Length: 193
Image 1 (tube, helix red, strand yellow):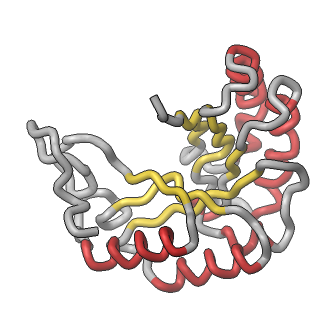
Image 2: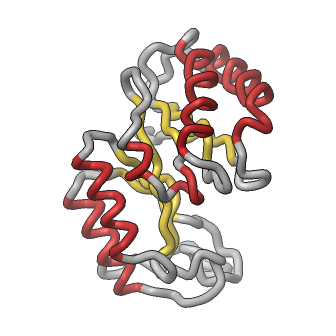
Image 3: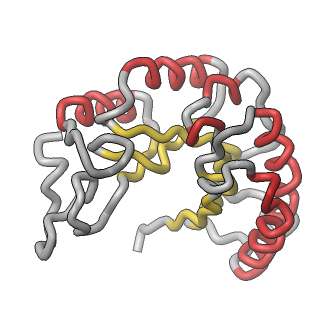
C-alpha cells in the first residue's frame, strides 16, 4: 500500500534510555525477528531522550542497534538525540558507526524556530541523515500557540533538504496540535503548505 511504519521506543519519562536498555533490547529483538527484512519497517530506538548528554544516548544505541542488525542488516534505524530529540548538532560531532542510521529532530512550530533549524543545518553539514519523526504546528505542550506561518517555514526547510517528516498528531483530539477537526475527516492544519 506504500505505507511505512515506525516502531518507536518512547523514553520521554524517565528520559535516560539506559534505564530501560535491557527492555528495549528484548523488544527490538522480538520485532526484528518477527519482521526480518521488511523494507517498510523503520525502527526508532530512542524517542525524545532528555536530561542526559549524547554520550549516554550513543552508548545505549551501540547496545540496541546490534540486536536489530542480527535479524535485519539493512533496515533504517533512527536514533533520538538529547533535549527531546533536538541536539542533532551534538550527535553529528560524534556519530554512530554503521549503515542506514538516521537521527531524529523534533520541533513544535509554536516553540521552536530558527535556532533549531540552525542545529539541523550543522548536523547536515557534518554528514548525518535527519528524519523529523515528530513535529507539531503548536506550542510544545500541544495545546497553545497554533503557528501556521512558522509551520510553513519548517515544512519548506524540510522539503528543500529532502528531510522526511511525520506530523503530531494525526488525531481529532480537541487540542491545537491535532491535524484533524474533531468529528470530521479532513486536514485543517496544512491548507496552503
